[in-house]
Image (cartoon, rainbow, N blue to C red; front, side, top):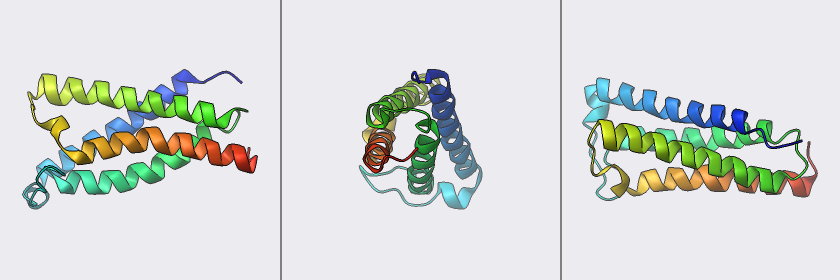
Length: 135
């Protein structure tokens, strides 16, 4: 079956919207917003830590769903991860850098760790499914 680009885009937008909504929730709740930052790691750990945990689980399960009907799971997992990564980088750049004028957004390790998860988890999940011959 050919690569389902539309579904991959939908999942990528879903992941980004979940992160954006959680960020809004954190900024609305003063106790969460005022949590101390970790220099060079995370400016808002109340945003990044829960999202990294949630993304890890969600990307794994979304990848399994997305790769169900494909034969070349490793390659398609990598393509799926690249799609998620590029959509999230584009939307983050548009919203945080262009609209909010946040010049330090990409300077924290937590955002790059999340981006790495978006790429690595689908690829490894596809490789695992391919080795196990799981449909």
